[in-house]
Length: 266
Image 1 (cartoon, one colour):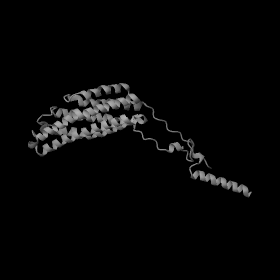
Image 2 (cartoon, one colour):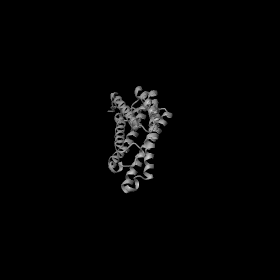
Image 3 (cartoon, helix red, strand yellow):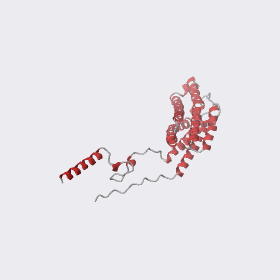
Image 4 (cartoon, one colour):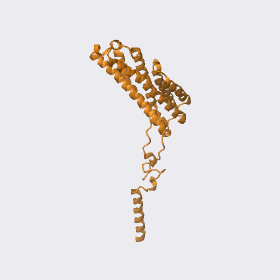
């Protein structure tokens, strides 16, 4: 009898050691804990962007298109104009500038949506160019808007001194060159990389990718004198976002993982 008690004591000690060290066979992969939860489901899953996040691209497109249209209706396209719009349309221009930060925030979210669509299929080289071109476009957009805002503030402080001055001409020319040459080229690179990733991974329709190539070539080889060229990029983003949103809404929701019933120890 004493030997039998020793055997039971040793067995209990070994079982306790397994539980403490994490070797309990009940906690292995595929088994359930005493609360009915699988060990695989205890791991936090990779965060997924919500399906409605594609609305960010739509918001970016609408806000940027509205801002560009307001600016085009208020400010002449000629970079050498004298600045008469500062006396008559300054409030409209200020409204257009106030939309730019929100468009930028939505564009950052749109980039996140595309990267979420790529997931594990994302290529590091193209991902770097994709992210870099998008951030450069956004930086130049913000810089140009800030310069225009500075012009409005300077005109409010001293209207007679600013109009017709070399400072105004220089600032106006800088804005025109940045947006119509450098920013639009970065938008073209962004579209080319996005279209390439789309063809490789299939995260958007192939016809949207080929359309992106065509429009991107137009942006890369266009000159600075095409007034409506800035509208091409947000229109393509709008199309891509609408496709992503509709495609996400059509996909069935993932079924919840089954959980086993808690054990009854009574």
